[in-house]
Image 1 (cartoon, rainbow, N blue to C red):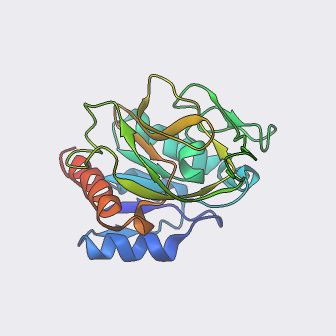
Image 2 (image 1 turned 120 degrees about the horizontal axis):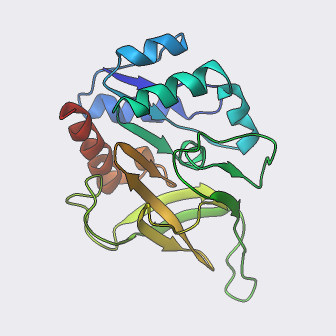
Amino acid sequence: MIALIDYGAGNLTSVRKALTALNAEFTTPDTPADCARCSALIVPGVGNFAATAALVGSWRDAIGAAVRSGTPLLGICLGMQWLFEGSDEAPEVPGLGVLEGRVVRLHGNVEQRLKIPHVGWNALDPTGGSRILAGVEPGAHVYFTHSYAAPVTAACVASTTHAEAFAAVVERGNVFGVQFHPEKSSDAGLRILGNFLEVARGC
């Protein structure tokens, strides 16, 4: 059973539709303690990083404990940013901290007409060796909508560029994150979600 975490900032409807299309069993846990009974966790999210303050405390503790015990975790968009130590968008709110680094605001480019927020389809530039990107062709296009992004670090398994390079997909052990919305990214997005479900089944 997949736990789809609802903290008031997630685009749960479209994620639920994608998981249903993949024949996944999922639930929206009512309490943090319910996370311990699930085979994997998904933290979605849209909007300002300050919204993740709702996870500070018992939810953050429960999700962190599940990750430490080996439960796979996928962060989507804002949920991926939350995997890091924090964000310049809301400096007072801590991230989960399972990945090193901080999320920063993207820089646009007036000459290239690259605006912020970054909204639209961008190509993935994978580094190789990723479980969550298995079967996804290099250059596959996925759908982004965001103003802040995580840096390209050792955990980055695919980047993309919008005036500057940033992490589009991260992966370390049982922790995964995508800055884009796989549930809105056609076949490539469904393949990525399906790969995460395969990881969960193997644990």
